[in-house]
Amino acid sequence: MCTVVHLGLAVTRASMRPGKPLDQRSRQSGYGLLFMLLAIAVLCVGSLVIATRWTQQIERQKEADLLRVGDAYAQAIISYYYSTPGPAKRFPKNFNELLEDSRFVNLRRHLRAAYPDPVTGSTDWGLVLAPDGGIMGVYSQSQKATWRRTAIELEHCKLSEAERYADWKFIAKIL
Image 1 (cartoon, rainbow, N blue to C red):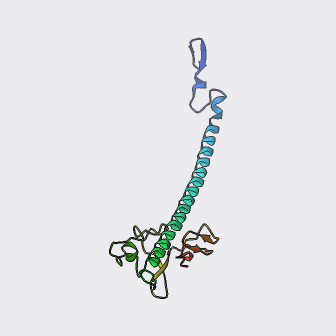
Image 2: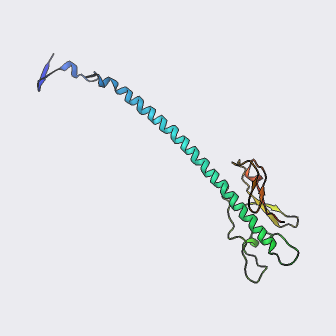
Image 3: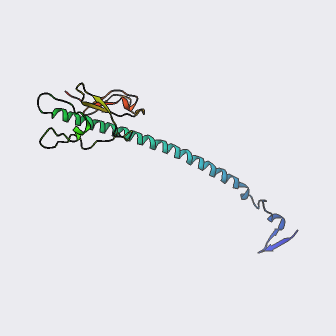
């Protein structure tokens, strides 16, 4: 056995072999790896929870936007209906009449733009037709479940209890 003396410390060649621990601390290095794996697992679970909450928040925001846009359509239909000249009131035949009401000398707009459905992202709304064939309301064609299940009273329409967004009919309140 060979002994090396360096700065007053005696180290034997047998104690310098690879794979053999030199002191007590080196035997605890496996716990660091275990702690690292546990920390990664906790971070993954936390990321999953955050992603789920973020997705739910986005869906709730889309629902709030749907309520706002649906009420805007109901308000535009009411405005069109009550601004019809003469005693016989009528509903608009299509969305273009809400965008550009040409029944008057000056162009009148009851709706600024054809707003897309916030839930589907499409401008293809479902239409609630009046007895005379005009549009008296709109609804989303999405089959997704709603977050709010109770009846909702908006400024220009009232929504009944619904399980899906397609069940909410934004029908203009005509007195």
